[in-house]
Length: 223
Image (cartoon, rainbow, N blue to C red):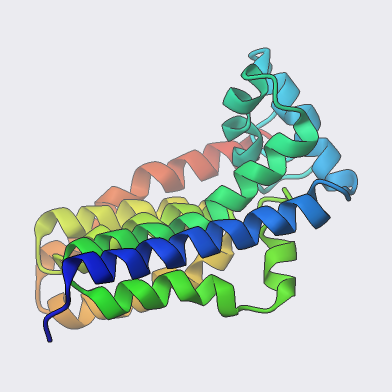
């Protein structure tokens, strides 16, 4: 089926702007208004990172949960944006990233309807999803990293896709295991395409090892 480029782009742009507007309104009416102790810990981490201070690998006081959101908030703090705004903005952008990058890549590859669906998904989820994905607690970092998996989906039988899958899967998982909701279906799809290919297993495993090593030594810090 052929689509008018102008018409489909307008629909795509409308859905994207609607998604950003929806999250902006939620930030203004909820995330900028309310905080808890976990978010204040992220505030402290962001202040420390801005000064070049790194006390420990994970969330202060526990042996898991890299505080990636605090690290990404540093440029916002440099611009003078308050912590109470910078962290929720970063968390929201990270949570929306997988849907937006999937939609953009699919649209450029002429998967028009599929790109619309990815932009519409966050708009159709319940309000609890917006709550969980706008508070800085490390919930969204794994999902953010797994968004890049779209590049191996488009070329499932390329050796480079095997390496991308292995590295991003390991990175996403060590950031937060909830990324399995993306990793598992990708893994099944790639396996079905390449289960007879030795390089699929070899390159996927080899690419995952650096991130697994990072996790191992991060855990050793606490021993």
